[in-house]
Image: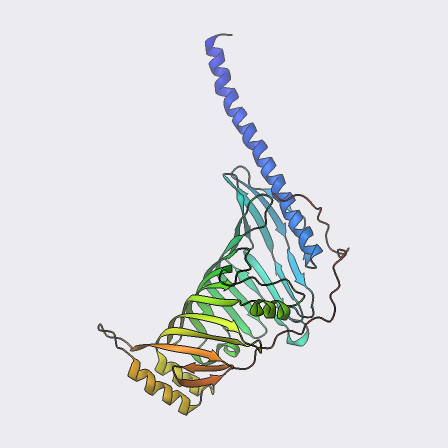
Length: 375
């Protein structure tokens, strides 16, 4: 064969070989993605979560492997001792699972579009439906190990419910897990932030229906033990010395602006207790609004104004005065400095289940999902 023909063969054959190798890699990644999603569905069903969906479709070549699942439904029936009495249900228009070929150990779950949610059951259930412009969950993982962290991006969410409309312009969050029994070490770390949150009149309270922004950073110190119900888990966590640290809480809601750091735990009655140091602005208008809504008594609000005005500082460049003030919560009594503001209603925990029956089978009415190794 002449040198010219050999060069021609290389020019034609090498690209074809690369395309073939790339296609084989994509098929492998797509198959592993499909197996991983099927395995997750099977695992959740075995734990009692009802999962329904339409026929999955593979796609995404050449840059990513993508599995689109139409009409996904996640449903948890009512459980004694559960977090949400009456159970819950979420329905979406589609869920899209994808991995980029150059980063195969991070899965992205996109559930933008139609949203429907039910919390509880019967006449008292909260039911909502709407849509989201973006709803993306990203989960990095290692082969053979459960995920240790996840991040969420949300944009343009609105839900019309039986109590009014909820909406969130933008939100993002991150959660990380570590395995520890030491109450001085974080078992869960969380960071959340959201802007332009609209709540209906019935849920708004004294400060209006628009929360301009909210941000939260927190760590759960100590492990939350496995137990049949949320009450048993939280009491076990409390008894082992568990607590919640919040190094940053930021809120802008109506006239109120707050920047705070706090520590929270549960007392012997399973009620929240804690302390915070807060930088507060707009307190005068906030106290007036709380009085107008009947949340605070006039004498308590006036006493708080006197103390806060003495402690307040006005910025050198002008603007509303602000104040650094300690806040404590003990025995459901919220205290600002040394001034008792209000007594909070009791936190009611779900009753413990009398008996737990292990899940031994899968609802035969649900679509099948073959068990397969994790990707």
